[in-house]
Image 1 (spheres, rainbow, N blue to C red):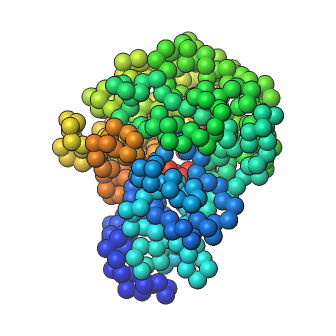
Image 2 (cartoon, helix red, strand yellow; image 1 turned 90 degrees about the vertical axis):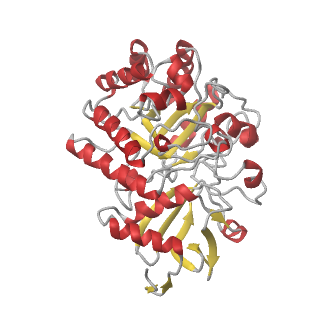
Image 3 (cartoon, rainbow, N blue to C red; image 1 turned 180 degrees about the vertical axis):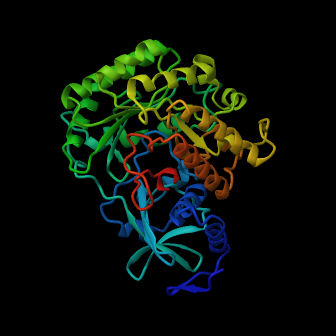
Length: 433
């Protein structure tokens, strides 16, 4: 363990663990290891840091909470925490790295103010300088309804992606909900941030908001997403309506990502023709038994095998690199009281996801990841489930890039540039490699 590096006193168990991982995985950027550590542990913010943050972009709570704390704890803060932070410098000379804000009062990692600088520290060890995501230029602009644009179309990816949740709940909620998901609980606790919108946002508001955001110089793409519906035809028509209405104004001038269930193949071409550039039929977890256990609604309505078939078929429409189903990284290793454990050894869970990655990439599908956050409002959160160690994520992303390069595939399309110090993807370190 380092005693002193470039004037920083490093004397904690957490620092020792980080440096052990740095030494064991020299081929992995240090930024990735620290980022995954913060995503797994969450971040504690002092009131002083939030006060000093100025006009930063507050967390939108647009779809999920991603927090480790109960919303009742988070809502007691004087200010909403930042949507994202960036860390850089420090004893390890980190390149600027964007990380999603995940509130945790129990985290050993603290964002605080020292010597008039906002910093990340653990114990007495200062690890990096910190900045909060600035408000995009379009924030504060008013829609014809009187709502602010950001109430309909907040930003992610350090302001590069306009993120529109058009259906703010999921019809699978209850016995068929995905067990890692807290979308309906998020709406219950944070829906007042967009009071008056309801669960289904008016398509005219969405089109107007995205068009205003499009004029902001930092806006590079937009995302349409939301909860699932039990009726596949109804869901397809619902989301297709938003795509068409928005593209009437944009006319293809801003790339569009679509995050929905796996659309029936005979309908999918309508989305492509309407203007969708990047398609994300999120499969969440690969193993067939886990899929039925973790995603029972998706399994009943679509089915795992059909989901995979539709995903592979969609590459013919959208092209190589533009079909990117999401994996909730780490949920395949779930170990929670009351749930049967699928894999007894952690390497078995890793091997399962690697098999899925190889199967999909061999067919020109390029998956993506979010690092699992066991939110208290999700079923797994209530069962006390814990994510696997940071080492697991490091091994998973090494395997991911090994397979991706073997098949000569690009980074997933629509997520921006990849690489350390470059990627703006906040909820996973896989694009920082």
